[in-house]
Length: 165
Image (cartoon, rainbow, N blue to C red):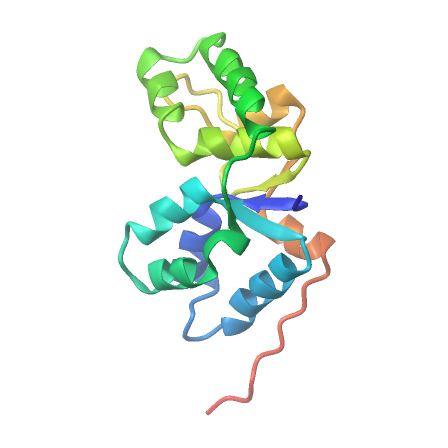
């Protein structure tokens, strides 16, 4: 369905660092516009993580609802098995595997696999056996994974800031 699927850290770091609601609302407007155009989305499990914080980002996520945060469909379910089989077949510590299979990352990777989407995350690949990183799973499963900056460049996002007060 959507070309890019965003990890929770894209929203969280955006709010906390680069694209605060108070000084860069254009980023958030761009996300909404691109979602309406079918280019950008995320998944329900990511929304659950964001809403749990009970802050301004939680309100933003709640307002976006299902059109932005996609529910798993019948195509995602078989992909969950494929992602799970990959994770359990690696040399990760049992706690790393258990954690991965319980968080949104697992569902995000499966959704991307099922719908041939591009995953967008701030995570970078790691050789650690203590945590499964999204890019490692994507590389192994043949899913394209990019940073938010790469997504913005690919999509030629332009943010026009208003005049200073």
